[in-house]
Amino acid sequence: MERRVIHEITPLMGKDVLYIADRHKKEFTYPIHSHEVYELNFVEKATGVRRIVGDSSEVIGEYDLVLITSADLEHVWEQNQCNSDDIREVTIQFDFNMTQDNFFGRNPFNSIRRMMDEAKKGLCFPLSAIMKVYTLLDTLSSVKDGFYAITQFMTILYELSRCEGARTLASSSFAKIAVQDDSRRILKVKDYISKNYMDEIRLNKLADMAGMSASAFSRFFKLHTGRNLSDYIIDIRLGFAARMLVDTVKSVSEIGFECGFNNLSNFNRIFKKKKGCSPSEFRDNYHKTRVII
Image 1: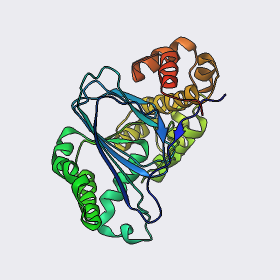
Image 2 (image 1 turned 30 degrees about the vertical axis):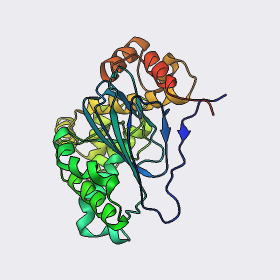
Image 3 (image 1 turned 90 degrees about the vertical axis):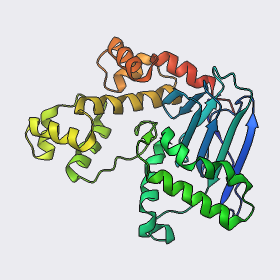
Image 4 (image 1 turned 120 degrees about the vertical axis):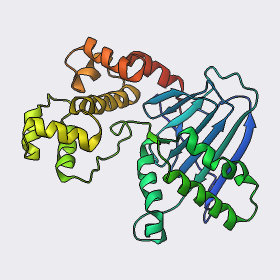
């Protein structure tokens, strides 16, 4: 039987806006899952827990705060090497329509909308941001009045949207997120790479698409994306490879070649350098968190 990620049915019903679960526990047992609604998940006193969001796998420290706004992005917090006997987890699920054509499309919500878009890949916040909203998170479940609970939660989102140092977790190709960019030239190039990642991609071809010389385009691409072109292409290929490792039964060598790596040893070496484990280990570890339904 095909292995599937659990698609969680949210407790949010009808005209509900927030679901808040504030609990203390000794271990994480819920399997990998996804859900339609957005989620902000805060964990403390759980050093050693492994957090998996898409193709990102990290061991967390004393505090962890992640926002996920994609219905298809699977995630889980695993016990791993955590020995704490008093883990606290605050999970906030919410269902706001933040399109441009409603109340949340107005100017005061610009930074929140940008953050929500980034969080389609999972967004992890630095300790400085967590400390800024800690008191609000700590007391949210005790706010009895629904209106005040929502305003307190919106304050949390707003403060997080203004913080520096938040970073996305899953790669865009794994999370199935369409490329977006302000520059038409860069967008055209990214779209080409996304559609042709399995083939050899030449710098001169991309530079021609952008109407620039190869050297000028390389500088322009790094300035605009913060990454070298070669690193960007590798990350796109690895995201597609990780998705195939999870969703198919193809061999590691097949996946490597289909994702544009010219030989198996090169694929293994680059994957391990970027992901911290071999493709086979990634597949085995990921499937350990999956259940048959």
